[in-house]
Amino acid sequence: MTNRRNTIQRKIILDSLRKMANHPTIEELYAEVSKEYPTISKTTVYRNLRILAQNDLVLRILLPDGLERYDGANHRHYHFQCNGCGSIFDVEIPYLRDMELAASRKYGFEIQSHDIVFNGICNKC
Image 1 (cartoon, rainbow, N blue to C red):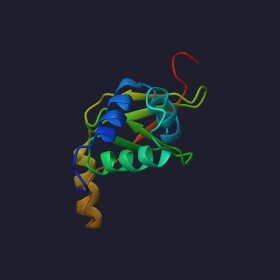
Image 2 (image 1 turned 135 degrees about the horizontal axis):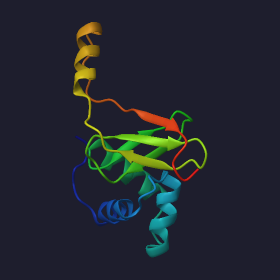
Image 3 (image 1 turned 30 degrees about the vertical axis):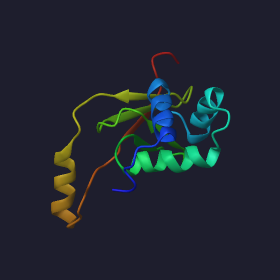
């Protein structure tokens, strides 16, 4: 684990992320944080968000289009990305550890986690 020391900046970033339900990009999170804390730097947000993700305090979501988004809910779960509006939604179904075990046994990998992003059209589109 990397730098588990709590800092005021880390708390501000974590609190802001947990208030946002849209799975923001780093840029979107920085814009939100800087509204209330205009002196915080973009570099501080980037560095601390990555530390929070490395320490499993937030989830880093890698989307097929290359975008990186973050989720304040740090339990393992899946996501849905709407091809219409681009929104990201949580998909609360059981996390399939059996899939990790099957791949590990077949290929000899040491699998630590997996991410699945479902794609389609949301019910609002």
